[in-house]
Image (cartoon, rainbow, N blue to C red; front, side):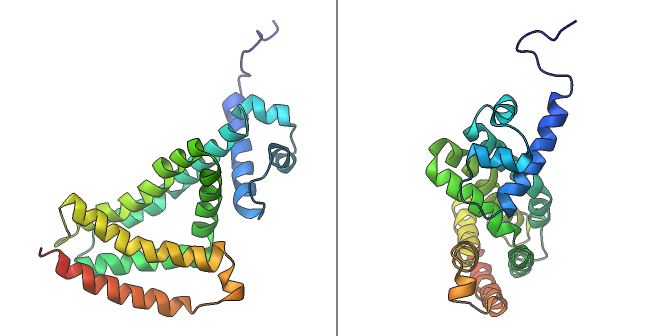
Length: 209
């Protein structure tokens, strides 16, 4: 019996997942800024109608890629959430984990793709905020809240989180996303060490407020 018009193949989800893996890898490693649907199709060795069949349109595909990146980041966020013995140690652990991600490059590539797409499309921007940016901030906030001596007031937690993550995001933006590593290179190991010392020293007293 022929498949009814509009009905999905029995292996629709399997093929869609495989395509999404391929297209996510292309989005993060190709170096192409805002690839067209045609470029995505070429990377997957598929036709544009095929991608529309599985993702609707380019916006739908980009949203699914961002959600896929977020799902792949869950293990890292889980590591970040682990409480430390004190606030200074919490900051130090977070800095070290971020430094590893920074050197490995995936942190910058992931946020670069989602940020560029999000700034160009408000709907995509909301997805980036909800599925990537806020969860990455909340992970460190949860770590501080679960750490002995950590701030419990929501406003303090938010301020402490921004104080720790803001410089790291700017560093990734400067060195990786804007090619500062080539034109204005920095000794990032010393910068990470300085941030660890300064942020940890300043956040610890704040818990007594």
